[in-house]
Structures are given as structure tokens and as C-alpha cells.
Amino acid sequence: MRRALLILLTAILASGTAACGSDDGGDSADTTTTTAAPETIPEDTQPDRTEERKELFIAPVLSSGGCPADEEGGEDGGEDGGESEAAPATDLHATADGIFCYELGDPVGDGNDLTDATLSETDGEFQVFTRVKPDSVDKLNELFNACFNAQPECPPVSSAGRGVVAFVWEDVVLHAPAIEAEDLAVDGFSLAGGLTERRARDLITLVNR
Image 1 (tube, rainbow, N blue to C red):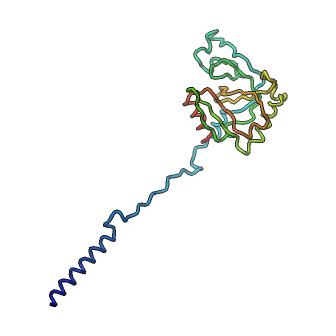
Image 2 (cartoon, rainbow, N blue to C red):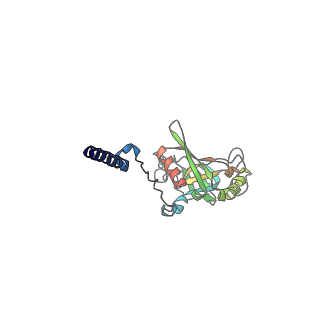
Image 3 (cartoon, rainbow, N blue to C red):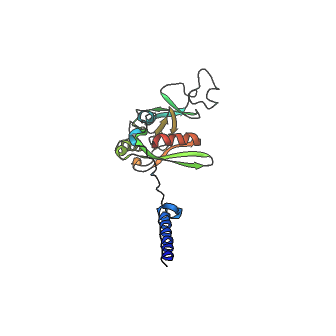
């Protein structure tokens, strides 16, 4: 009788030990996995692009017209789409196709005043929209409103008698719209149009990062 009880007690203890072992992690369904938080890059380690953004600037248009012929290339100058050959005069800024040139006043703002650039595509051509940083709204509205009212610093260049603002990047005029509304800097507006996807995305990266 005692031997039978001893065998039963041994069996119970062995069963309990096995059960404890499974609670220690034997069943994968009961385990939890800790997911590491996404790695974040501190702002102070991001590259400083302040000087690079200055290559994208905003200035009033003083006059506009067709680009002068390249003295070296004659009438053939600019037909290959080169940006620099179409406008040999250093005081003029040409469009990417080299057809139109603009005489500009002093820059009022640059890429450091812009934010939230976004992309839009129509029939394979890309357009970039942007907004003005809150701290720069008053400064740029002073320019936009002067152009809207065709003040001397932004004379009436458009056919509607409004002043025109040029958005220039790397010495190429991306966009030169007549200002048809006051306080334009409060809302978003078009920064450039007719771009390739790569150039549009490069412009967005410059503004947003």
C-alpha cells in the first residue's frame, strides 16, 4: 500500500514539474514580442541647407521679353534647350527653354521662407505648390501686394497692368506669374510648372528638408 502511494506521489510531482516548465516559455503562443520604436534622426544632425535654399529666390520682375541671341551661336543659340546659352547677359534670367528672359529687382525672399511643397501631375508634366512659413508671410505679402498694385518696385509688366513675381532656381525662372490677388502669401500658390518629375522632386526636397 505504501509503495503504491509513493508511486502515485512521484507521478504527481513529475506532472507538476512539467507543467511549470511549460509556463516558463515552452508555449510560443503565450510569449509577447517587443517592437523597437522607429529610429528617428535628431534635427541637429540633419544637413544645414540654408545656403542651398538661397539658390531658390523670389524677386519682382522689372521687365520681360524674348531672350537675346547667343553671340557665339547666332540664331542657333538656345535651340538645344540649354539654359545658359539662351541668356548670355548676366543681368537677365531665362526660362528653362531659353525663350523668355526677365530683368529682376532685388530678391525679397528665398527657399528658406517656404514650406510644405507638394507635387501635382497633369499629362506627364509636374507642378510644385508651396506655402509661406508663418514668420515670412508679412515680408512676402509686402512684395506680392506691391506687384498687385503695380508699385514702382514691381511695375506693371503683365497685359492686365499687374506686377509680376519671378521664382528663380539655379538662375532659371521656374515661374513668373502676374499677381492677381492681394495677400497671396497667406495661402498656398504655384511655385513651378512644366517640370520633369525628377526636377520637381528635387525642388520639393530642397524646400521641405
